[in-house]
Image (tube, rainbow, N blue to C red; front, side, top):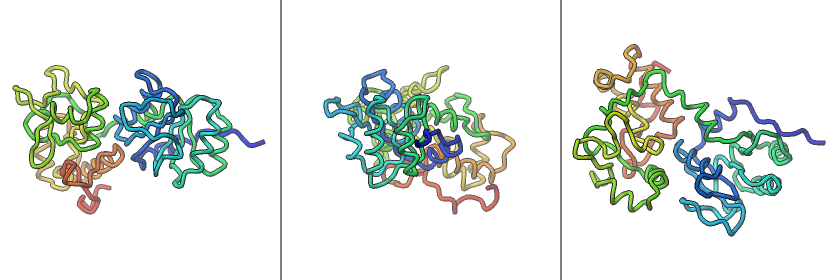
Length: 296
Protein backbone atom coordinates (compact mmCIF):
# COMPACT_ATOMS: atom_id res chain seq x y z
CA UNK A 1 0.00 0.00 0.00
CA UNK A 2 1.35 3.42 -0.93
CA UNK A 3 2.14 5.75 1.93
CA UNK A 4 -0.22 8.67 2.40
CA UNK A 5 1.11 11.96 1.09
CA UNK A 6 2.18 14.34 3.82
CA UNK A 7 2.82 18.02 3.27
CA UNK A 8 6.40 19.17 2.76
CA UNK A 9 7.88 21.35 5.45
CA UNK A 10 7.40 25.12 5.46
CA UNK A 11 10.81 25.57 3.84
CA UNK A 12 9.71 23.76 0.68
CA UNK A 13 6.39 25.63 0.57
CA UNK A 14 8.19 28.92 1.19
CA UNK A 15 10.62 28.30 -1.66
CA UNK A 16 7.85 27.26 -4.03
CA UNK A 17 5.91 30.42 -3.21
CA UNK A 18 8.99 32.63 -3.46
CA UNK A 19 9.90 31.23 -6.89
CA UNK A 20 6.37 31.24 -8.31
CA UNK A 21 4.42 33.91 -10.14
CA UNK A 22 1.25 32.12 -11.27
CA UNK A 23 -1.42 29.94 -9.68
CA UNK A 24 -4.46 28.04 -10.92
CA UNK A 25 -7.42 27.50 -8.58
CA UNK A 26 -9.52 24.46 -9.51
CA UNK A 27 -12.96 24.51 -7.88
CA UNK A 28 -16.62 23.69 -8.30
CA UNK A 29 -17.92 26.99 -6.96
CA UNK A 30 -16.48 30.47 -7.51
CA UNK A 31 -19.54 32.32 -6.21
CA UNK A 32 -18.85 35.42 -4.08
CA UNK A 33 -17.81 34.45 -0.58
CA UNK A 34 -17.03 30.85 -1.46
CA UNK A 35 -13.70 29.35 -0.34
CA UNK A 36 -12.46 29.27 -3.94
CA UNK A 37 -13.45 32.90 -4.50
CA UNK A 38 -11.60 33.93 -1.33
CA UNK A 39 -8.57 31.84 -2.31
CA UNK A 40 -8.35 33.28 -5.81
CA UNK A 41 -8.71 36.84 -4.52
CA UNK A 42 -6.17 36.22 -1.77
CA UNK A 43 -3.57 34.88 -4.20
CA UNK A 44 -4.28 37.72 -6.62
CA UNK A 45 -3.73 40.26 -3.85
CA UNK A 46 -0.53 38.46 -2.87
CA UNK A 47 0.89 39.23 -6.32
CA UNK A 48 0.20 36.03 -8.25
CA UNK A 49 -1.30 35.79 -11.71
CA UNK A 50 -4.41 33.71 -11.07
CA UNK A 51 -6.31 31.41 -13.44
CA UNK A 52 -9.68 30.06 -12.19
CA UNK A 53 -10.50 26.56 -13.45
CA UNK A 54 -14.11 25.32 -13.01
CA UNK A 55 -14.60 21.62 -12.31
CA UNK A 56 -17.52 21.38 -14.72
CA UNK A 57 -18.22 23.05 -18.10
CA UNK A 58 -21.45 24.48 -16.68
CA UNK A 59 -19.58 26.61 -14.14
CA UNK A 60 -20.08 30.31 -15.02
CA UNK A 61 -17.01 32.46 -15.47
CA UNK A 62 -15.52 34.09 -12.41
CA UNK A 63 -14.57 37.77 -12.47
CA UNK A 64 -11.31 36.80 -14.26
CA UNK A 65 -11.00 34.89 -17.55
CA UNK A 66 -10.86 31.21 -16.75
CA UNK A 67 -9.46 28.03 -18.24
CA UNK A 68 -12.14 25.50 -19.27
CA UNK A 69 -10.27 22.67 -17.54
CA UNK A 70 -6.96 21.56 -16.08
CA UNK A 71 -5.86 20.17 -19.46
CA UNK A 72 -6.23 23.67 -20.94
CA UNK A 73 -3.71 25.20 -18.55
CA UNK A 74 -0.41 26.37 -19.95
CA UNK A 75 2.68 26.60 -17.79
CA UNK A 76 1.55 27.40 -14.25
CA UNK A 77 3.69 27.42 -11.12
CA UNK A 78 1.11 26.32 -8.52
CA UNK A 79 -2.15 24.38 -8.78
CA UNK A 80 -4.67 24.66 -5.94
CA UNK A 81 -7.20 21.81 -5.97
CA UNK A 82 -10.38 22.99 -4.24
CA UNK A 83 -12.57 20.44 -6.03
CA UNK A 84 -14.81 17.94 -4.16
CA UNK A 85 -12.99 14.97 -2.56
CA UNK A 86 -14.53 12.50 -4.97
CA UNK A 87 -13.04 14.26 -7.98
CA UNK A 88 -9.58 14.86 -6.48
CA UNK A 89 -7.91 11.70 -7.88
CA UNK A 90 -9.07 12.51 -11.42
CA UNK A 91 -7.95 16.13 -11.02
CA UNK A 92 -4.56 15.02 -9.72
CA UNK A 93 -4.17 12.69 -12.69
CA UNK A 94 -4.90 15.60 -15.03
CA UNK A 95 -2.27 17.71 -13.28
CA UNK A 96 0.29 14.95 -13.83
CA UNK A 97 -0.49 14.98 -17.55
CA UNK A 98 0.34 18.69 -17.88
CA UNK A 99 3.36 19.26 -20.16
CA UNK A 100 5.00 21.44 -17.49
CA UNK A 101 4.89 20.11 -13.94
CA UNK A 102 3.89 22.74 -11.33
CA UNK A 103 6.27 23.60 -8.50
CA UNK A 104 3.58 22.84 -5.94
CA UNK A 105 0.09 21.35 -5.75
CA UNK A 106 -2.02 22.56 -2.85
CA UNK A 107 -4.89 20.34 -1.66
CA UNK A 108 -7.63 22.03 0.33
CA UNK A 109 -8.28 20.23 3.60
CA UNK A 110 -6.38 18.97 6.61
CA UNK A 111 -5.96 15.27 5.80
CA UNK A 112 -3.68 13.33 3.50
CA UNK A 113 -5.34 11.77 0.46
CA UNK A 114 -4.93 9.32 -2.35
CA UNK A 115 -4.59 12.27 -4.69
CA UNK A 116 -1.70 13.58 -2.62
CA UNK A 117 -0.03 10.18 -2.64
CA UNK A 118 -0.40 9.98 -6.41
CA UNK A 119 1.21 13.38 -6.89
CA UNK A 120 3.99 12.76 -4.37
CA UNK A 121 4.92 9.41 -5.90
CA UNK A 122 5.30 11.18 -9.25
CA UNK A 123 7.76 13.64 -7.70
CA UNK A 124 5.42 16.62 -7.40
CA UNK A 125 5.64 18.71 -4.22
CA UNK A 126 2.33 18.54 -2.36
CA UNK A 127 0.98 20.46 0.61
CA UNK A 128 -2.48 20.80 2.11
CA UNK A 129 -4.46 23.13 4.31
CA UNK A 130 -7.48 25.38 4.24
CA UNK A 131 -5.86 28.16 2.20
CA UNK A 132 -2.60 28.66 0.35
CA UNK A 133 -3.19 32.43 0.38
CA UNK A 134 -3.30 32.29 4.18
CA UNK A 135 -0.15 30.15 4.20
CA UNK A 136 1.57 32.76 2.04
CA UNK A 137 0.54 35.47 4.50
CA UNK A 138 1.89 33.43 7.39
CA UNK A 139 5.23 32.79 5.70
CA UNK A 140 5.81 36.16 4.07
CA UNK A 141 3.78 38.87 5.78
CA UNK A 142 6.42 39.64 8.39
CA UNK A 143 7.29 42.54 6.12
CA UNK A 144 10.83 43.86 6.43
CA UNK A 145 13.02 44.52 9.48
CA UNK A 146 14.07 47.80 7.88
CA UNK A 147 10.62 49.26 7.25
CA UNK A 148 7.36 49.47 9.17
CA UNK A 149 4.59 51.50 7.56
CA UNK A 150 3.19 54.21 9.84
CA UNK A 151 0.29 54.99 7.47
CA UNK A 152 1.27 58.65 7.56
CA UNK A 153 0.34 59.16 3.92
CA UNK A 154 3.60 60.84 2.88
CA UNK A 155 4.07 58.39 0.01
CA UNK A 156 0.40 58.83 -1.03
CA UNK A 157 0.77 62.54 -1.73
CA UNK A 158 1.55 63.98 -5.15
CA UNK A 159 0.39 63.40 -8.69
CA UNK A 160 1.71 60.88 -11.16
CA UNK A 161 3.77 58.47 -9.08
CA UNK A 162 1.45 55.45 -8.85
CA UNK A 163 1.73 53.57 -12.13
CA UNK A 164 -0.98 50.97 -12.78
CA UNK A 165 0.58 47.96 -14.52
CA UNK A 166 -1.52 45.28 -16.29
CA UNK A 167 -1.25 43.06 -13.20
CA UNK A 168 -2.31 45.97 -10.98
CA UNK A 169 -5.28 46.61 -13.24
CA UNK A 170 -6.47 43.01 -12.89
CA UNK A 171 -6.20 43.20 -9.10
CA UNK A 172 -8.03 46.54 -8.94
CA UNK A 173 -10.72 45.34 -11.33
CA UNK A 174 -11.49 42.34 -9.12
CA UNK A 175 -11.33 44.35 -5.89
CA UNK A 176 -13.51 47.22 -7.14
CA UNK A 177 -15.89 44.99 -9.10
CA UNK A 178 -15.39 46.98 -12.31
CA UNK A 179 -14.27 46.02 -15.79
CA UNK A 180 -10.65 46.99 -16.42
CA UNK A 181 -11.54 49.77 -18.83
CA UNK A 182 -13.91 51.32 -16.30
CA UNK A 183 -11.13 51.29 -13.69
CA UNK A 184 -8.86 53.08 -16.15
CA UNK A 185 -11.54 55.63 -17.05
CA UNK A 186 -12.63 56.41 -13.51
CA UNK A 187 -9.47 55.97 -11.46
CA UNK A 188 -6.48 56.77 -13.67
CA UNK A 189 -5.10 59.44 -15.96
CA UNK A 190 -2.43 59.10 -18.66
CA UNK A 191 1.04 60.36 -17.82
CA UNK A 192 4.26 59.68 -19.72
CA UNK A 193 2.44 57.04 -21.73
CA UNK A 194 1.25 55.09 -18.66
CA UNK A 195 -1.95 55.09 -16.57
CA UNK A 196 -1.42 56.53 -13.09
CA UNK A 197 -3.84 56.77 -10.17
CA UNK A 198 -5.70 60.07 -10.03
CA UNK A 199 -5.31 62.49 -7.14
CA UNK A 200 -8.14 63.95 -5.11
CA UNK A 201 -8.64 67.67 -4.51
CA UNK A 202 -6.40 67.40 -1.43
CA UNK A 203 -3.42 66.36 -3.55
CA UNK A 204 -3.38 62.78 -2.24
CA UNK A 205 -4.10 59.55 -4.08
CA UNK A 206 -7.86 59.30 -4.62
CA UNK A 207 -7.93 56.12 -2.50
CA UNK A 208 -6.17 57.64 0.53
CA UNK A 209 -8.36 58.45 3.54
CA UNK A 210 -6.97 60.78 6.21
CA UNK A 211 -6.76 59.02 9.54
CA UNK A 212 -7.49 55.65 7.95
CA UNK A 213 -4.93 55.09 5.21
CA UNK A 214 -5.41 53.28 1.93
CA UNK A 215 -8.99 52.25 1.12
CA UNK A 216 -7.81 49.66 -1.44
CA UNK A 217 -4.92 48.32 0.64
CA UNK A 218 -5.33 44.59 -0.23
CA UNK A 219 -5.33 45.42 -3.96
CA UNK A 220 -3.03 48.44 -4.01
CA UNK A 221 -0.67 48.77 -7.01
CA UNK A 222 2.84 47.31 -6.95
CA UNK A 223 4.44 50.75 -6.64
CA UNK A 224 2.61 51.28 -3.35
CA UNK A 225 3.51 47.79 -2.11
CA UNK A 226 7.18 48.32 -2.88
CA UNK A 227 7.86 51.58 -1.01
CA UNK A 228 10.50 52.36 0.23
CA UNK A 229 12.34 49.73 -1.81
CA UNK A 230 12.44 51.75 -5.03
CA UNK A 231 15.32 51.40 -7.46
CA UNK A 232 16.76 54.81 -6.60
CA UNK A 233 16.87 54.00 -2.89
CA UNK A 234 18.48 50.62 -3.52
CA UNK A 235 21.22 51.68 -5.91
CA UNK A 236 22.01 55.21 -4.71
CA UNK A 237 23.20 56.02 -1.20
CA UNK A 238 22.16 59.69 -1.42
CA UNK A 239 18.62 58.82 -2.52
CA UNK A 240 18.39 56.31 0.35
CA UNK A 241 19.53 58.95 2.84
CA UNK A 242 16.87 61.40 1.64
CA UNK A 243 14.15 58.75 1.81
CA UNK A 244 15.19 57.72 5.33
CA UNK A 245 15.07 61.34 6.45
CA UNK A 246 11.60 61.88 4.97
CA UNK A 247 9.88 58.57 5.77
CA UNK A 248 9.33 57.77 9.47
CA UNK A 249 8.86 54.07 8.71
CA UNK A 250 12.44 53.44 7.51
CA UNK A 251 14.82 52.11 10.17
CA UNK A 252 17.33 54.71 11.25
CA UNK A 253 19.97 52.12 12.12
CA UNK A 254 20.41 50.20 8.86
CA UNK A 255 23.25 50.74 6.40
CA UNK A 256 22.55 51.48 2.76
CA UNK A 257 24.08 48.17 1.62
CA UNK A 258 21.97 46.12 4.05
CA UNK A 259 18.86 48.09 3.07
CA UNK A 260 19.56 47.53 -0.64
CA UNK A 261 19.88 43.75 -0.41
CA UNK A 262 16.93 43.46 1.95
CA UNK A 263 14.90 45.57 -0.49
CA UNK A 264 15.84 43.37 -3.41
CA UNK A 265 14.78 40.28 -1.43
CA UNK A 266 11.51 41.96 -0.55
CA UNK A 267 10.75 42.91 -4.17
CA UNK A 268 11.56 39.42 -5.43
CA UNK A 269 9.62 37.47 -2.83
CA UNK A 270 6.57 39.71 -2.99
CA UNK A 271 6.39 39.51 -6.83
CA UNK A 272 7.15 43.22 -7.24
CA UNK A 273 10.19 43.24 -9.53
CA UNK A 274 9.34 44.75 -12.91
CA UNK A 275 10.83 44.16 -16.34
CA UNK A 276 8.91 46.28 -18.86
CA UNK A 277 9.38 50.06 -18.70
CA UNK A 278 6.47 50.56 -21.11
CA UNK A 279 3.84 49.06 -18.81
CA UNK A 280 5.38 48.90 -15.31
CA UNK A 281 6.93 51.37 -12.89
CA UNK A 282 10.59 52.02 -13.72
CA UNK A 283 11.33 52.32 -10.00
CA UNK A 284 10.67 48.57 -9.69
CA UNK A 285 13.19 47.52 -12.34
CA UNK A 286 16.23 46.37 -10.37
CA UNK A 287 19.01 43.90 -11.13
CA UNK A 288 21.41 42.33 -8.65
CA UNK A 289 24.39 43.83 -10.49
CA UNK A 290 23.07 47.31 -9.65
CA UNK A 291 23.26 46.72 -5.88
CA UNK A 292 26.20 47.46 -3.54
CA UNK A 293 28.89 44.79 -3.54
CA UNK A 294 28.62 44.37 0.24
CA UNK A 295 25.54 43.77 2.34
CA UNK A 296 24.29 40.42 1.04
